[in-house]
Image 1 (cartoon, rainbow, N blue to C red):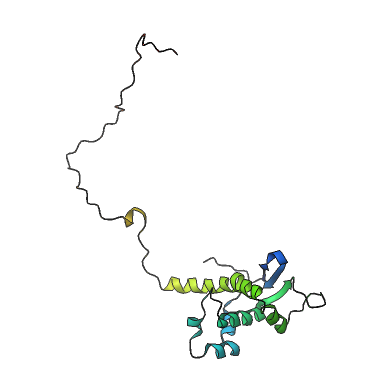
Image 2 (spheres, rainbow, N blue to C red):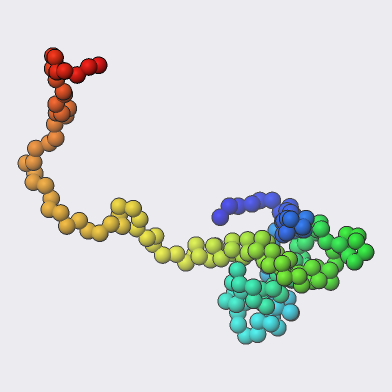
Length: 175
């Protein structure tokens, strides 16, 4: 995990070819905790613990509601989002909700923003519950079945033992 000490908002290109991007604060612990306590999310989750229901990369209804709740807290500005009159849309909770109703936008928000922050959380959890790493390379090879060399085996010669071709006088070859 790379530690990012900056709490400054960053631009996320959601649909670059259409010029749609958002300026969003990082989803720090306070924001994620507040989102998990949101009434809409709790009502949708029912009795299941949210940590078990929300998995990154799965666009379930619960994940979409979580992404909406987070978006309403973290989006500070946007580009490429206009009202019907062609002017830049104001940032309001209702406009953010309407923005995320578009399937491409919702998927891009989940992929480029939410998955990043949820993946970091998942990576940290996995680091706490780790197994020994699998063997790799030569340490993962099968046991050797070859017999060991005898202790009194001769060592290889250090000098070059290959024969050099002799030049024969009058061999009939032209150079």
